[in-house]
Structure formats: structure tokens, C-alpha cells
Image (cartoon, rainbow, N blue to C red; front, side, top):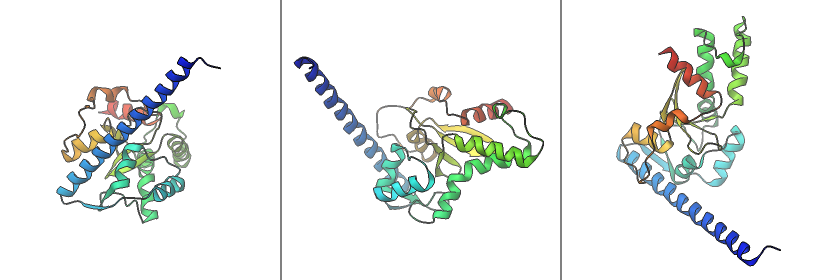
Length: 220
């Protein structure tokens, strides 16, 4: 049996971890409210938030795990319009949004001869090249749609998940975090005092997608 002071130390650790989790959750909600208010002031329609049941349905249907920073926004509301995905209805449209980054790269493979070295020798047949590319991208962390051709990396192993801009094979990091993306795209002032550092973008490694970003940088 552990000594009393060991038990007490473990209990204190659990209490502190719970306190930090609650503070982080409150900060995420505060940031989400600020983002939605700022979008509404710009004339963007804001729909009512999604229920946990709806969020779980989306995740199950498309085999994704919506990152908490986006989930906290969707619980409160979500922007609506042709430049935003409809998270509540239009299942076919939402599926197209989720699949769009892969289709963008496949277009580059088919029409521009794009190929990543890590995929091995490029097949002579375009259909086979598309098949290999599709397999590699679907094995990579999914990208969740946010706005136009901006997508949030859906990788729970990353401490900070970047937003990528994907237009065919022109792929760049558009924000080191979702919060930073909204600050840049919509000039939204951060609610939190913590600042996302641009110089961290280079240290973010996302399976498969980082290689495509580097290839795009090399081609510029």
C-alpha cells in the first residue's frame, strides 16, 4: 500500500490536472464566443450550435475526430454561407468539403504530373498514380473544412494543429493554430494573452501533408 504522502501527492496531481483542464475549456469557450461575435459583426450569418449527438454523428459518418478548438466553436454556433461548410444538414455537401483536399491533390497528379518522392516511382498509368496518391492521402491525418480552401489538421497527437490552405498542390500553412487562422483571415483580436508564434510553423510535422508543403515551397 502506498504511503499516505504518496496517496496525497497523487490526489493533488489529479486535482491540479482537473483544474487545468477546466481552465483550458473556459479559455476555448471564451475564444469561440469572440470568433462567432466577430464574424457576426462582419455580416456573416451564424447558425445555432450543434448538439453532441450531431457532432458524434459527423465524426462517425466521416471517420474523423473534430479537434476540440473547432468543436468548442461548433457547440456554440457556426458560420453559414457558400464559403463555409454546413455542419447541420446537406450530408453530401459536407462529404465533398471533407474530401476536397484529397481531390485537389489528385487533380495535380492527373493534370500537372505532381508526385511526392515518398510515394515511390510514379506509375506510367495515370489511374494507378491516382490510386496510390489517394491511398497515401487517406492514410494521412484528415483535414477538416473551416473556410473556403482552408482546412484544420485533424491530428490529436499534435499539441497545436495548423490550418492548411489547399489549392490543388499549392499547399501552405495558413495559421499555426485555428485561433491564429481566424486572427489572420478575419482580423479578429485574440481573447487570450498567449500568443501563437509564427516561427513554430516550421516545427509542425503532419504526416504526408508536411512533405507536400515542402515540395510546394521548393517549387516556388
